[in-house]
Image 1 (cartoon, helix red, strand yellow):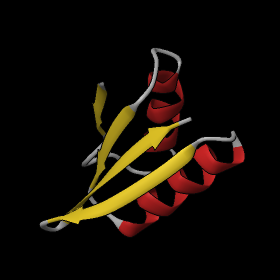
Image 2 (cartoon, one colour; image 1 turned 180 degrees about the vertical axis):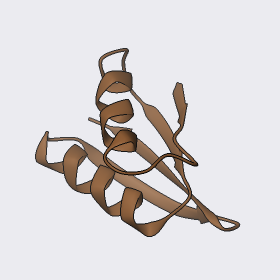
Image 3 (cartoon, rainbow, N blue to C red; image 1 turned 90 degrees about the vertical axis):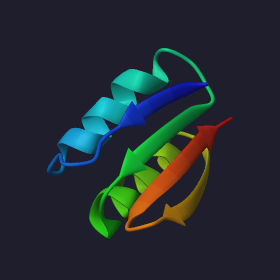
Image 4 (cartoon, rainbow, N blue to C red; image 1 turned 90 degrees about the horizontal axis):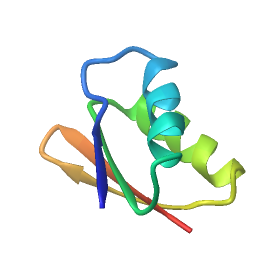
Length: 67
């Protein structure tokens, strides 16, 4: 499983990082530190046909992206 830590980055950087990481394979786990990157990455991945699951991890969020 590929893992991406996008915490601390401002949008649109987490989405760009996610796009590049998806080219390396699935499933992909992405860590973000806010609701905005959570929503933006979820929307981006779903528009590309991926399945997205998310959960809160303390004050952060973990997204798992798969086909």
